[in-house]
Image (cartoon, rainbow, N blue to C red; front, side, top):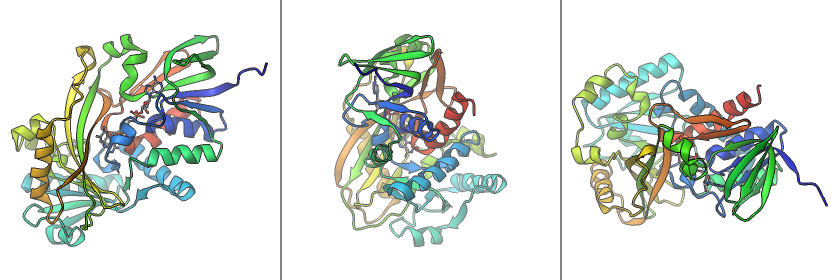
Length: 386
Ligand SMILES: Cc1cc2nc3c(=O)[nH]c(=O)nc-3n(C[C@H](O)[C@H](O)[C@H](O)COP(=O)(O)OP(=O)(O)OC[C@H]3O[C@@H](n4cnc5c(N)ncnc54)[C@H](O)[C@@H]3O)c2cc1C
């Protein structure tokens, strides 16, 4: 009988976090197996906007986002990924948001992150669909990327397999793990098992199914987001579009000197605030536009599950608000969905070695497409003491 292969690393979950832990470990020459419960990655990593926006991260995390940009660009040369390099636009709609974009621009100059202040005319020149009545001015980040969330992760998996970087086993639901001395075993629902020297669990918002006790005691919360895809458009909207409510929401702006004073004035619209709505646009290469999103929260210790139905009200609000921002779009909905991720309420990520050589890395929240490639590189270097 051929003895079973012992991997240096087994990664559970083929979302963006798991995939980049596997990628960086493989680049070190380690043998890597990725186990994914579905026939392909189907979690948050395919349900998102695909905006790679280090500009929105706080100063602790922006470095991971900037490193991720470099990694995506390098992989794009190698595997021809569905990535667009048209940058990100933050569009201010009033005086308070203008103050915040000016302050963030000053911070960027100090930290050496490239951004350009645009006046209203420059903005509408570059984004002809943008309404003059909405746009007071903007901040542009030329180095940022948009990725196609429906394609990117599969393209990376394909590239990694074609280059022999890692073994991937799909339809492989991990149900339990055990450790003996310096070897761990991973057991699947189909009766198979695999052995690895280290295990990294990156199973997103499903974490509770493997370690319910740790989950319930954690400060994790699960977030449900609703999104829309508008039908293919004649209009062209280049880059990631983030609007006034995003300026009021994203972590980078919370570090601006005037943020607290502006926040203290309360929400602009109570209903939008109650749904956790801010308005983002991103056009895919096929002409369709992703529009969203809303946020609902459930704490780990609430021990409840979300109602999986899609609520119509957030969709009405996306369209109502979207119409205030863009002209000439077709607002017909092609698809709508809910995406889920987990996040920590205090920390920026959940990263624990819960048994010797078994690490859980999840709860990266709404920044996973932006920060995972860079964060995973640092985490792999830390785990392997480089
Ligand atoms: C609607 C929405 C919009 C977003 N927009 C953006 C954005 O524009 N920019 C940005 O940076 N981030 C965005 N995010 C956040 C980003 O998508 C997430 O942070 C990221 O995808 C999380 O990646 P992950 O690998 O941790 O989880 P996931 O992508 O959920 O991957 C976990 C994987 O583990 C698998 N799995 C689970 N349990 C098991 C098991 N027991 N055995 C085997 N496999 C298992 C799942 O099937 C899944 O494939 C958005 C998220 C959502 C939901």
